[in-house]
Amino acid sequence: MLNPFSIPKPVNEPIKDYAPGSPEKETLLAKIKEVKSQIIDIPLMIGGEEIRTGNTANCVMPHDHDHVLATYHQAGEKEVKMAIDASQEAWQTWSKTSLEERAEIFLNAADLLAGSWRDIVNASTMLNLSKNVYQAEIDSACELIDFLRFNPWFAKELASHQPMYSPEPTKNRSELRPLEGFIFAVSPFNFTSIGGNLPSAPALMGNTVLWKPASSAVLPAYYLMLLFKEAGLPDGVINFIPGRGSHVGPNVMKSPLLAGVHFTGSTAVFQNMWKEIGENIQHYHSYPRIVGETGGKDFCIAHESADTDVLATAMVRGAFEYQGQKCSAMSRAYIPTTIWDEVKEKYLAQINTIKMGDPEDFTHFMNAVIDKASFDSITEFIDFAKASDEAEIITGGGYDDSKGYFIEPTTILTDNPKFRTMCEEIFGPVLTIYLYDPNEWTETLEIVDSTSEYALTGCVMAKDKNAIDEATKALTHSAGNFYINDKPTGAVVGQQPFGGSRASGTNDKAGSMFNLIRWVSQRTIKENFDPPKDYRYPFMAEE
Ligand code: NAD
Image (tube, rainbow, N blue to C red):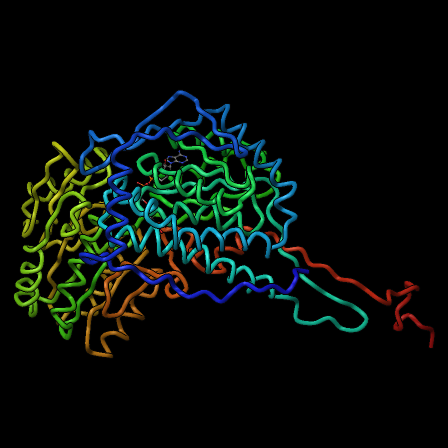
């Protein structure tokens, strides 16, 4: 049984403003200057040792791609094996520590990140991921602090869940055992907080982890490793193995000790990992737990009764914050013909004020997309729309990668509800709008539900309560996170547990106890204080 412990009830970390002249802006700018002025060397971290393979790649600034921030070493087969060995050595002690001891380390990490580490983690996120200060603050500071503070609370709730009855003379109890083996945490580029949560959630539950961060976001991930160490995380509990996914992944997943995969990223990569696990299934010591949050094609359906100011703002923020590179970003909108003129006017008025550029200039709402591959794939969609008879570009459409990977906030208007950009994930600053006849509201809800393979987030905009109710019911399976009169992005830990279904993932809800249950295997223990001493039952007695 776990000891009664004193994990504090968490509250969400307040978001700092970084307003002109504020002390937080001043210290952050100084840290940005420092991060930009150096090229650091990032080793692998295996069993607490720094490992340098000599097979290196660069961390750059997407808004100025020739500017190198760091060089990082990439793992190969040998280092994967070393990391697995180190994880198993650490497992011997870590898996036996109490939840209270483990929680204390991650709560320490949260306090460090809320305090002296906030600037370096935010600065490296702004520069390496090309995020404006607000986007960095809500991600690498606030959301990760929340994960680190709420998960211990959820773990305590889980541990307190015990069998209902213990009839005399027995005592029943349940304990949460870490999984045997190691967890493979594989994180995407777009959120430093997800990078921090994927390895730390299983580690909190007593597991040891191999963490492969996204290649385009290694710098903030490295600072998180240093932060975990300072918070007191023992060597070998989280082993840091950056490198090419297609190289590192298969080497990890063929290990018989793979106990689980904690993945966030694209649907295609996740499906391939699942296939690989399937192919190896006979070789594993246990059935690996597979948790993956993947792509989205997130919608906004506006009713005729929608507040047009709210709708226009939700479209701008929902589609273009962080250049649309959020799994939850609004990328298809359905607007009634009757309110379109008014919405369009308000929407264009807002779009026309957007400034784009370097995140160091705090007046920039948008920055660059992450890398050349993303730039090429997003601009291919834009060119496709430009060339099509079924679509018209009403904002943006321009792009330029000469200095940084910049793409204008692009809006496509189409008369085909199944136009390619209404269906496929683009993962960039592109919103496609389809105008519908308000008499076909119910039919349009069916179109929203059936247009994409994904079901991550979506929103309905309406003042009419019946319309809200109808949309909420009709779109039950269309989104794991559904918003009413709000944009479909910006889930907060402890408020909107996050995840989607269909091709969007296993929906194990990051930032909730339902995620944590995947990283333990329960043992039920019955103790009998007066066990029988004769095999015969009363029914067997002779009359
Ligand atoms: P990605 O799939 O390209 O990469 C994700 C991670 O997988 C990276 O670390 C990558 O190196 C690794 N990887 C690639 N091939 C691999 C392999 N064969 N074996 C093991 N690992 C491998 O995704 P990305 O571009 O970093 O992120 C964008 C995607 O993530 C989008 O599709 C977005 O919708 C999704 N996403 C989803 C959520 C969510 O909560 N649903 C959150 C953030 C991002």
